[in-house]
Length: 83
Length: 111
Image (cartoon, rainbow over all chains, first blue to last red; front, side, top):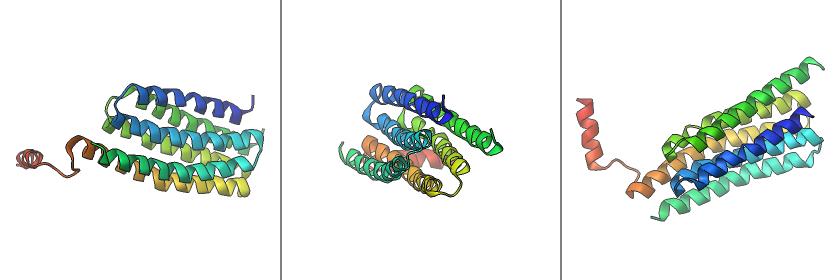
């Protein structure tokens, strides 16, 4: 198996603990799991780019890195306002 | 297999190991503040994977964009960590600043 594909598979498996951590806790404790899942998704797209040698995939990683930052910040801001 | 491929794979799997350790840490630990500590190893792992891509591809289109991803994560992750801790504090106490009783506790500890 291509090592980059194996790494992608392992990273997708890493989403499961994030999901479990987010579901088993309150909203505040779910926020770090959300941020970590964003990093995981970006890195998975990086490794998939190398696994399939498809250059467009890396554009998705760049866009996702920027959007997950903005999305997480917006979610965190709404969360702080809601008490 | 060339030395470049070996170095890229070593960087790749060490990065993936850091990220998986962070994922398990997030699932195991309880509070938001405990979990925030695990974003740092994940960031380190993401940087290692980005460097692995650069080592594999050198400074091509993919390598340059992998570096851009690394820079975005390096700038964004500490920001999100700080914002999460602040939002959690506001969610719990209404304000992120120290309460009067907490200030007194700190004064007593300082003496």
